[in-house]
Image 1 (spheres, rainbow, N blue to C red):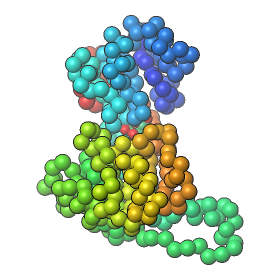
Image 2 (tube, rainbow, N blue to C red):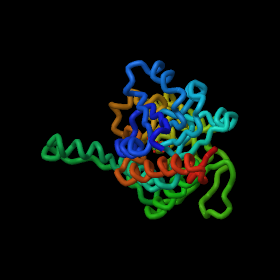
Image 3 (tube, rainbow, N blue to C red):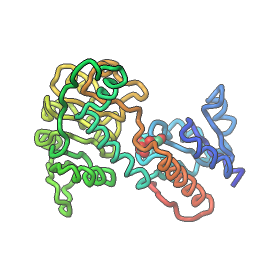
Length: 313
Ligand code: 8YV
């Protein structure tokens, strides 16, 4: 397979790069001084593209690669891949489900604890020597709080499982009720937000879920409510979120994702009731390796005419 051209638009994982380089003709778009020229020069050779959460394959890229057969995304979310175009052109698409579920769910708990127990602020208090000068202020308890989950797929269920260990009542919103689950179902996000203390966004990003967190939902969550976003930035109307936090209409937020990554609204930097992470939901050594192995497994299966391991299209 050494002659098969695999295009990687942006750097993602040194391990993935190294393993792709061992097997394929890896073309690193970001290393080219002139990207358009590079694409033109290699357009006949590229049979696979590696996508990720930030860079998938839009119509422009798909149209520029006439020999493209497969887009293997180094992510579970494939909102950056134009699936309709892929179906139309018979291009296969794969993602990396399951292997990152634990890490992303773990991070939701970390963010909730971080916001409620002010972990980052407390760390700064020790490092700055503040502890020697006075008493630290009280924070808010997590155990027993009602947690609302938007999207009860693989990761949503893993969040719920973890939250159960904190004796938190669990409620959820999803397109349809899941009668096999014992958690309370709300048929609207506003109703869910009105009835929980911590709202976790973990559904896929689609036309329907874009800005699923709007002003009405934020106001329903209220000045004691906490928003945790481990989905996609575009799930949240970010300017509404920023205003609500600045005006004290929302209790706090734990964010791993943003509307225009890596740009994060700077007004948030001054707030102590906010924890800001740089989209690291699945970024552990273990999961990085598992995701990369799955991307390679899908490519090898495709080029050996075997069934794909995790097909989306
Ligand atoms: C990954 C993600 O970190 O899998 C996804 O959809 O958003 C993230 O967990 C990212 O894809 C790694 O590039």
